[in-house]
Image (tube, rainbow, N blue to C red):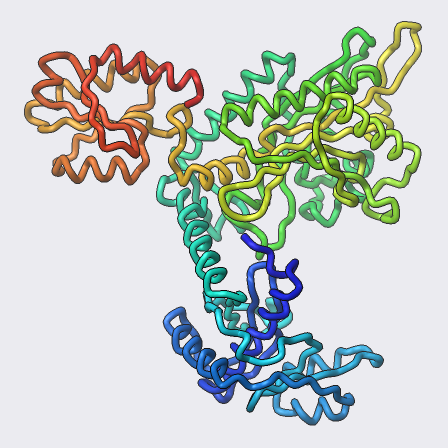
Length: 583
């Protein structure tokens, strides 16, 4: 969706429309008081105190009507600078504005904007007249704590958006509807993929049986590819001591993103936010010769990271996640070839999933930020130059982004453009000269001397959680047959005459390794067919007299009205080929 904050003129228009919203609310609810009304990426909002009045979505059309009335009146928007004393007197009846004024720096230029009978404290800028705020839409109402603090009073927040033309507004609203249809939270609930519950905690999704099947198929898929490339998989604990993360450097550079530590007996533990420290110790468990390298250690690892409660979202942004993680321990002369293999694996996976709209970002450190990044200029220059050299050598197109690296090294991020919404980072590959030093890792070179390996961190899916959310939104829940929780739904036309044959078909399909559902409910055939489509099952078989007599099936593929008659044996062959080709 369009980032309104990045379009300066559109940003000013939306900020002005926020004032128009406040003026209309003041007309309808004279006792209303206002906190702040900023521009956001997708429009604007205004936080307000309406006393006992609780707004609902049903109240928005009336507010919009009043906004349109004010806009047609066409009053000019006039700016006036105020002294602190004048400002305090002007807003003496509004405790929220008084609080804003009292917390301003002494040298702050205080200004207010007036449009007709409404004046609002604001630094601007604004459009010339309210008439310019013509094409707008109020989107939703929610609660918001005063100053974002849960200890404070709950205010009401009204969201809206404003555009320069009616065409732009309609296009945006259409995009919103498309995003709503694709929202993985809605799809995930309808298809029984995952759930959340406050008793478990925010950002802690529960994978339901259907979701567990999808995730297991993803795990099996990438496991087979990694095995073929020589990866060795391990299991490591979901916790580690604080000392482990002090050794790795995460405690100093990543602590604010970790859960609080917990003391057990004489040790202090923390839920792990990533797996690299554990894998460093797995490597260090044995002596290694230069002939042993590269060593590729993989794990489907559950990690925990603190996300603000307002930021968590379904499977896309969580506090508990499972990473498709791996660490490659290589000699310096192997960096290029191993990095190339990782990129080739990423491209191979994207081909299987039909992902075409993506780009590579070389994420570098900000050399001025000594807190976020480990302070070693020589190490950073070496790592960044090496990674840039590898990408150039293999002809991988990329752009550079300062300040996006991991604290220990530069990385290659793959940014994928989804069907709706901003780009998301799915895959990542990082070059690390630091952690091998901090964990004192080594291998013996061909002259019998100890050398320090280089580590390549990589995640192809990123996390299974985010990748599943991405897939649900890309496909609108219409997963390819190989990934679908139920691949075939079998419906007998009449249970009395056709159920026995239907059961034999189900047995044959299950013996072939297919995931099958038998719908033997005493419901009308049309109802069962519609429900099968609602559940987005790839194949629906309808079995009646003809199919029973000829040992055949009549199938309808999801999204098609065509019904195809085929022998059971041929159907199994067809669907197995489809699954084997990841269709």
